[in-house]
Image 1 (cartoon, rainbow, N blue to C red):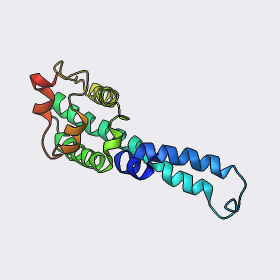
Image 2 (image 1 turned 90 degrees about the horizontal axis):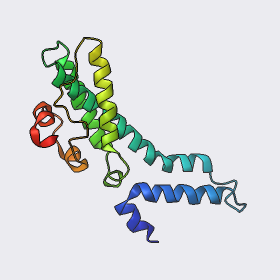
Image 3 (image 1 turned 135 degrees about the vertical axis):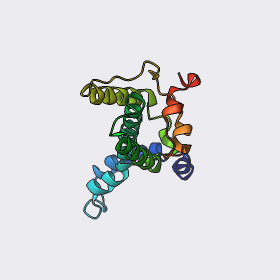
Image 4 (image 1 turned 180 degrees about the horizontal axis):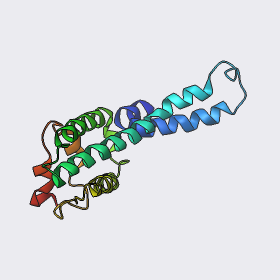
Length: 162
């Protein structure tokens, strides 16, 4: 296997394979046994999957805030929601890597965002508009390239996104 190429093309799979190999190696006796800090080396490489989990959480929070704006555009909280959504989306974009495309279930992230927004809105007797799609209306590439400063309200509610 060409690990250098795999690293360039799919760093998350590369990291998973390296962690598995290092775990096997850490359990074998050899001159490296007392020289290498296996636990921390493995943890550092395994952090790639924590970046994916962080990106998913940030996307969920960004989507939830945009959805609250769609549902209650007159709320006194809209300005704060927009600031937070922009921040969450920017942070998510910084963590997203092409290798994550196949590992992030955007529909699942979207559903969790819908639920979080619905729960938050319920407290103020508001609901998500019926026009909000049930599936994530954005592709991975659109999310990576979108300008976080753009108000996504029109994008979320547009006919071709449902």
